[in-house]
Image (cartoon, rainbow, N blue to C red; front, side, top):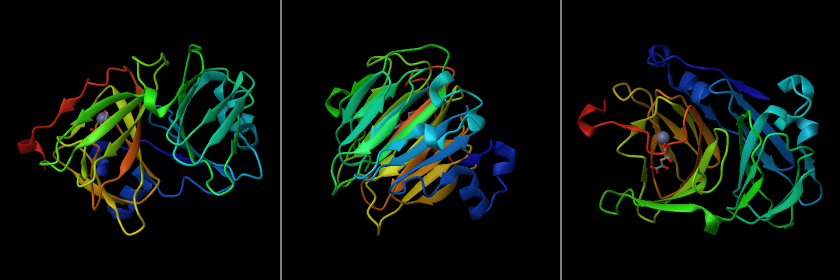
Amino acid sequence: MKVLHNMHPNDTKHYDTERLREAFLCEELFQLGKINVVYSHIDRLVALGIMPNSQETLSLDEVIDKKSFGTDFFLQRREMGIINLGGAAVIDTQQGRYTLAHLDALYLGKETQNISFSSLDTQNPAVLYGLSVPAHHQYPNKLIKYEEARKVQLGSLANANARRINQYLHPDILETCQLCMGMTELEKGSVWNTMPAHTHERRMEAYLYFNIEPDQVVFHFLGEPTETRHIVVRDKQLIISPSWSIHSGCGTKNYSFVWGMAGENQTFDDMDFIAMQDLR
Ligand SMILES: O=C(O)C(=O)C[C@H](O)C(=O)CO
Ligand SMILES: [Zn+2]
């Protein structure tokens, strides 16, 4: 399990490229036949990269032992959201079986047990991206199909930021303790996400970029609004963004990303927008 620590904005100003990448970026979350786990001390968010091949089932309990989390099983005191970025997947739990097509999502509430993952298509393995945070109430498990996610259209082609936000774990769709999760798709010809940039003091955020071709990159912008830095991000790489940091990106071509938030509130619009003239 990879562990990422908190960073202070005053320290971050002095980071060079390597140190920035170490603190904010996870380069290799997905490996065929494996479950990879990243533990961030920011709001105790855990990111999981789960890529079962069609021959074997991957069991969460085999990767996350009692010692790592101090509980009898992973979701004993946690909740989790999963979005499938690959081929069809089956997720089995003691409470039920769920089939996820490409871009479907699943919410697993506190106390869900015996979780395992398999791919249905030999040619096209499932690519399951999970986020988990502490939870103190049990809400029911729920499958959210891509079509059922709440759709919000933002930006314009003229500003190179036309994009669709798909909100899966959102208070209008289902109740969760704190986890919010969704996926943003940029239209062809649009390259900017989340600009004008914002922060939200009450929530941290994680961005998992995908649909980036091998010869393309996204420049992800982070830092305090007056002390911005960038990290070059490639396909299926993860950025962890503390609440004091902007989180925005500009690609060399259109791309998509999964965002997830945890913290004090679930009010999506509770953002402090940065005026363009204040960005530095
Ligand atoms: O493209 C966007 O804008 C986003 O996807 C914004 C994120 O959802 C976000 O930053 C929510 O706070
Ligand atoms: Zn945000």
